[in-house]
Length: 418
Image (cartoon, rainbow, N blue to C red; front, top):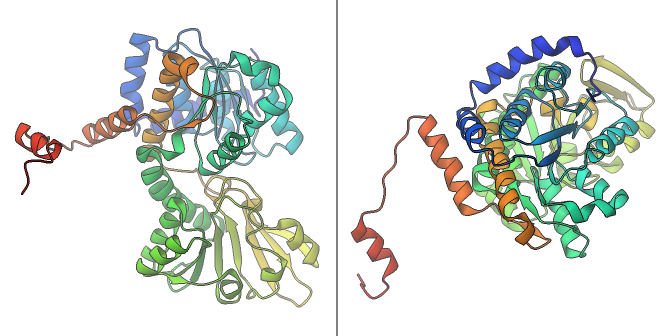
């Protein structure tokens, strides 16, 4: 068996946690039954670069039940749950390459190991698998049916590739599905980011000056949850429409320079680089806490912070203290990586249920339609988005109405009038 995990003996413990997460993922459960019967992925090779968590393990089980040959590597060195990786390798028989805390070289070696399985479909979270495939293995692009992308940062990179005519096969932006970003990004990131902060620091949020950088769906979720716990929330944005929305939602809106001197706890969630830089560290209060909930560890300029510091030490798990020459101390959480996964367990299973249902259904769609799709970034087909919503409502015991024939006619006929 071809795999690289920390400790294969952890498989049993991982299996228990995967089973527990699965009990909160009823939509994936229904899809697993359907896929096992219909075999929509029979014989297809699928390469995935995702956070190796209990929720992802349940997605892998669905894909394998549908007939796919799946290989998996981690999309973040600090998000891997070693017991889950062991279960996937030992019990599910999946080539999995994921070790929590792996260095950058190992990270890319693991991506190469997935590419060596010659995938026909990629399933990415951050676009590192897709970029590596294009940069180092362009000869393999002709065999691709397509791919899917899980997160905002990855979609940004894919659209840049499309803009430059560099995208070698069609990719579906799963992140942009309504049943993904409206729920996973907002409610999942909102709750799990706060969870990561609290597990790492055990600080009281009530009354604390809490700054959110970026007011996309993830930023909205973080700001909403922080405000709900009593924090005084400020938002920094470059988009005037989002800044206006943040103000209308009751948050303070200010520039990064203003926020750096004002805030006490900072969360970057922009998908961009060096949002917090040396000039901001210079004016921060003693004891300020810095963390990131964007996909890559580039939003906080850690190299600049390290260069400024007189000393650095780890004072708690996931908490590094940077002592500055003037006596101030700044605290960085989770090495600047995704705090919700580095210091906690990521999104709750019940919200990942919808995101990963989209992934599974999009994989089946690519098997059917991939060869006829243009080499660009595609939206999730509306019928898939609506099916996921319908299945989720059904699992929650919620019924909704349908339009009557009269109402359908009224909405379709502009001559009826008022």
